[in-house]
Image 1 (cartoon, rainbow, N blue to C red):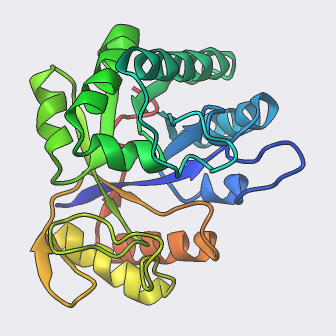
Image 2: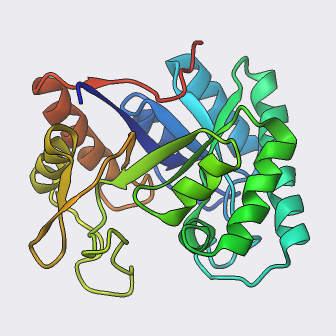
Length: 256
């Protein structure tokens, strides 16, 4: 691959509670997964992030979640299909409305946290999310974890899919992410992370937590905006890729 997208989770501050450095990250990434208020983010903060994304020419995606502000969207929920579909429609619609006022638009959907992990393998909940996207705007791209069954389910339903890899997360041999409850799940060494991502782009492989290489094809790389040292990490990944001749560009173009 000669190009890749770099994304981050943004718009997650809530009232007096500050999360991440959106302004700086938007000068580094090519796509912004913007919170929709269910796991994080308030309307005024989300709007500020959208305005900044528009100014930087960064592609915007709806970072939809379970209704879980207290748990930051990281608690699994057994939600009825119709309720989950409605929740996702509501979140995409809200972000679309805010984005319209800033001169940009929502181009993709990336589920957050527990919802992201659940629908990667749970077909019932996956189909509820797919239905929501199709009902709102079937042109929206679904971003999901590379190598999971959801990739196939979404494509069978007619959606475009962007497969995602995580720069700052450790992997199991089956391609799943190591649970955040386990030691070593989150990576913090910028040089190590940057080299891992260069190998991913050039060779289509990533090293697992136990030292094995697995095949992984991705359209986008995520650096979490809420991780300690997130900006430094994102800068290291961007610099390593661009210095090696890899072009960074949004998979869903912000200016198209």
